[in-house]
Image (cartoon, rainbow, N blue to C red; front, side, top):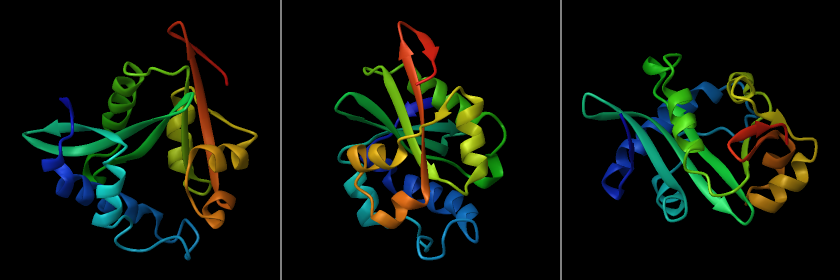
Length: 166
């Protein structure tokens, strides 16, 4: 079941993000990886502008995805599924649900260039690598220059319910 997350879900979202982000250890640049991957302070700040949705099984959230409309696009933020529940279609269902909520014609997601599984996930769902990723990251995200240089942006245009390459 997919449901909109509430403030009372903050601890669970924190747990899911930090457990799933362990996959980055040894993959992304060492100067960008730390535990916890996202602090509680950072998450609470994110939750002021990002709307999170969770996949719930047996009364417990096991995967999350967030969206943030920014100007003329919608950003996907923080797509994570607990490791023991990955590769079961939960991320795909969360992404499909998110697409039904769009109020902008373009959906963008930034991820680590070396997180090949994340890039493959979005490409499987029709996203394309954006050639102007530095400009996009600087325009729509507030991240440090080091993260810009080690990240990619994937995009999907949705017009009249039809997916198109950006």
